Image (tube, rainbow, N blue to C red; front, side, top):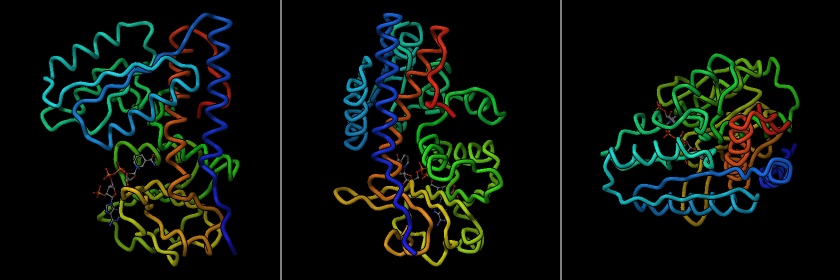
Length: 291
Ligand code: NDP
């Protein structure tokens, strides 16, 4: 048996085309251009690459891209003042503060200063609470991308056993919440989980979000399971959390690294920005771009 390779690149390209079409309609019908502001504090090279790539794709789908590059020693007061200014600016529909922040800045405080309606990363405590109670929210981009890939491949997820390995606020927890909202029976595994191979072996859907290359071995995977590999590690050659070569012979479907979840993350960020723009202007939200 050879697993179907879930083509995240193609799925993301399709999503970006849908976003671009909606942006074009917003422009022609309402004279509105969605705007996404990205704030980078400091000069972390990996963050710089992400921010550049986000800016490029924002422009490609016809949206307005605003970039704020701040010094690594920017004070809390200055960063909060910039967030206040963007919260009040009606041409900015989405605000993203690139993480991680330098140690002297409290990430929770900074994220919670963003207007939840403009929090396109979905990390604001209000959005976390809305997602947790099954209400309309901004959904974190990486788990949203994983959910879209799963739905695209499996259709409805009702009743499936899902294991999410990792419990971060950015990936693991919101992923588990989304799967639960889609009627999966969800297990969240982490570094203290006992018999992780046994836990994974019971799952129809495996989402690995750890950051340990090749940690999930092929003999952990239930034959026919759908495997979503969020993990990325490495510089020039990126590696996922799953032993891809082995897993391909056991799983029903699997995302590659690179070319799986990664491209979906940015596409979902663009989708969230269009959704935020529609909500801000009292316009109907684009179909197919949301959960
Ligand atoms: P974190 O480091 O915040 O979380 C990692 C999680 O893995 C923790 O919950 C940790 O458990 C768990 N873990 C660590 N070791 C083990 C182990 N031996 N067995 C089981 N669980 C373990 O990472 P993130 O959630 O931010 O990211 C996870 C991965 O996804 C990273 O590789 C990151 O680069 C990648 N990523 C990819 C994105 C994409 O677009 N493709 C976007 C975001 C992230 P504990 O809580 O107990 O410490």
